[in-house]
Each structure stands twice: as C-alpha cells, then as structure tokens.
Length: 297
Image (cartoon, rainbow, N blue to C red; front, side, top):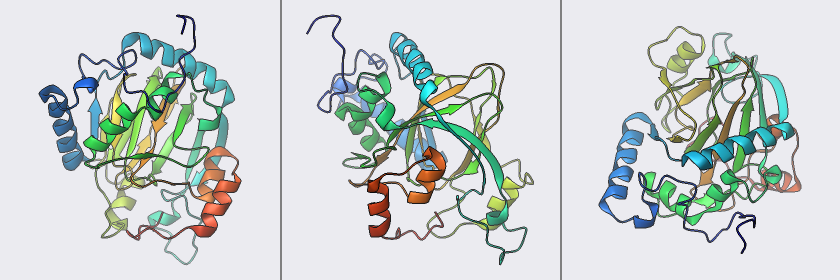
C-alpha cells in the first residue's frame, strides 16, 4: 500500500496507535498494569457516578483530521425540531399536568447517520476496531460488545448549531460512548443526573423536579474537550446538552455498542431523530420484545 493510499475502516484492525494516544492508553498492552489501571478507574467512576472520561484519548493530529472530517460531514446533517418529553413518548391527557411525562421541551438538533459516514473517516475506523470494542467491553464489565445492526444508528455524528440544544432525555442503550470533535464557542455543556432512575422505577417525582428546574442541585456539569472519550450510563441518568452559542457548531461522534448482537432502533424514535426509517426498522418493530427492565422507553 502506498503512503497516499486511503486507510479504510477495518473490522480486523487492532493497532490504533495512529489515532489514539497509546502512550497514555496502551491498547496494545491491554493486560499490562497501566491499561488495567485505566480500566479499573473507569469502572469505579461508572459505578459511583454513571459517567467516566478518558481525557485526551485521541492523538492531536488524528483529532485535527477528525475535526476537519466532522465539518465535512456536517453538510449532510438531517435537522429536526420537535417538542418532546424525556422519554420521546406522546402526550397522555389522562395524566396530571404536573407529571414529567407531560412536560414537553423544544429539541432542535441534527444527525449524520452511519450510512453517510465514509469508511476512511477517523470515527468509522474507531467504531469498528476490535481494540475499541475490547476497551469498551472491559470498561463496562462485559465479555464482549457488538456494533448495532441498525443501518443508521450505531455510529452517528451529532451536530448542534448555535441556538440549538438537546433537552433532558434518556438513551435507549444502557451505555453510550461519545467523543466531541468540535467544541462550540459558548454553551453546549453536558449535564446529567447520575442514576436518577433504575429498573426499580422511573422516580417521576425527582425527575420532574429536575426537568421543571426546581432541583438545581442534582444535575452535574461535565466540561468535555475535543478528543476526550466519554462512557456514560445514559439509560438510567437523565441528561441534556445546554444551548450552543457563538459561531461554531458542536460536533460529537456517538459510538453505540450493545451487549447483544442484532440491535435495531425503535421505529418512531428513528423517524424523529433521522427523518427516515428502513425496512430493517419496520421488520424489527414487528418482532420487538419489550425490555425486561420495564422502563418507559
């Protein structure tokens, strides 16, 4: 292969030293004490707080490339504006007006879906790498994690232009992995409420207090920098991204892995987020079995 040859996403690729700061995160020596110390720290942070960050995960030159690619990808963004509640469910007039399920917030954001992200781009190379999957699996205490079978999700770029935000919500996946590639001039801060709900219940009273702005003590603010890798328990921790200001957009790569193969996103949520659905979504919705934890979304 010549030096000018394009490096494609390779499902068998284990050497990420040209993308990841392997001096800080020695992925090739996974069983070594330095890497195991990192993993233990991440596990402890996830257990205690539902959130962990690997600061400076990306090499500076790779991050610069990912930033440039993100700006290029942003031209393909599907933008949607809607009023949604934290569960992406429809209004239920039978509930009391104070119920948080009846609190609808303005959501205007954009996504570039996986089918639009070329195989040679940095975030695609990271997403499919066995080294990345092994790292994520170890950090969340699983033997293995899997890429989504969803043709749109799994890997997406979230784009937040100035004046937009992501209001309070939960993720469908128990864990989510993200990396900001472009930081806005103002705002765009990640705020979250660690483990505010659980399989035991939705905790509507406390959740409602946060959403209504009555509880300002529970939410934590995490200041992320481009190139930081974040692992987050998004299914149990209510979270949002505050409004972006200034001139620059906020770009974040979202790496979604599942603890079982074959995961496809819900039909209605896919339509809301990406503006389209595929035959895979329609088929999966017909065959869907409700999740065992019984949570609303």
